[in-house]
Length: 200
Image (cartoon, rainbow, N blue to C red):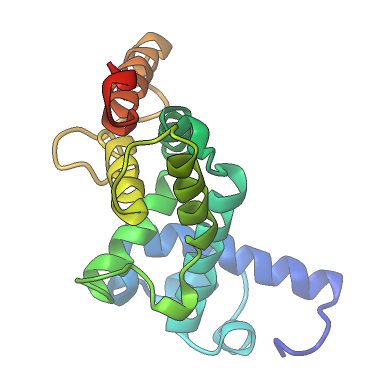
């Protein structure tokens, strides 16, 4: 079914499955998610779900890799201003806390060590090149581009839904979020500032 062009009705059903399953996986993880709950809430049946995605794991993959693409598109990196990138990531976690939860379940249940996804599925090449180019231009400190990227992402997640200290929500007062953005922006700028006297 997945190889055939979808009718408008089929596309709508497939999207309902994705929407419902995103919340199911975000809340319960891969092992805890239940196909029965997904098809009931999506007003469809198991045959359609398996026809579109093959399995529960295939459905998770479609959602998880779609979430990575969303963050790439909605929050594109600007290696000349990694502090602003971190703040935009912070805002995206407020808008879509389910996306960061999906990544956490993938880490816990699939890849407890190493990269979050297999090398063939990684989507960070452009980010790493951008950081490397910014380093060559003297705009970012020296160091392994991947490690710098990982540090900035970790800082952006300080108040994310998976924080072991405090999980922020979009319902909090705007001034609270702005205080965090200011702190995050300043902290990332200090961390990635170019090496040498010019950075002082």
